[in-house]
Length: 224
Picture (cartoon, rainbow, N blue to C red):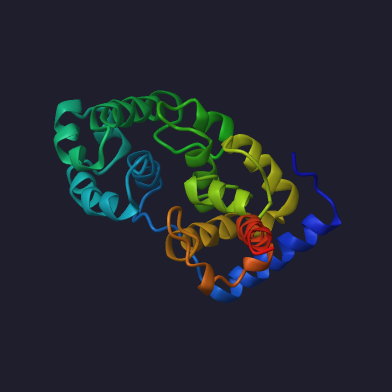
């Protein structure tokens, strides 16, 4: 377990500043106009790229314009539209059922409370935190696959448990920086610190990379 101390705080501050300089303006890359559209788009993004979701949602949102429309939708019809996003049967059911709950329990509004969001079908902490941060401007740590990977590589947290990593980052990242920091980690994870072939030679935060330090140490011992 990685403890939170002064060194960790300084590291976090350095990473925030370095990534902010690299990416001054960041944003959610899922396209949406209405709150419920972000909720649905994020559900579609599970095990699917944002680019693919953005190709599908214009058709979906033009066919079903409101939460009430989705609540009354034919699941089979939604399946046809979102099929290319993968897991389309489960996602279609979740979309219709969550919108039915939004109609019956939340006056056709997306909740601004994380516990209420977690009650919706198919909505986990990653999606709930994105909604909290993106729509309601509340502190939010969105632990997607890039955030988990980079948090481990940079020694900000350990393991793959998304909730534990969320808690660890909440202790290190100021609330006002939390969502944008996660967006920056995602962008950096896609462009530089990729899963299989990271561009270590282009890395601006390599001084804190645990993997790189380990590789250097192993190389040193091999050359002795």
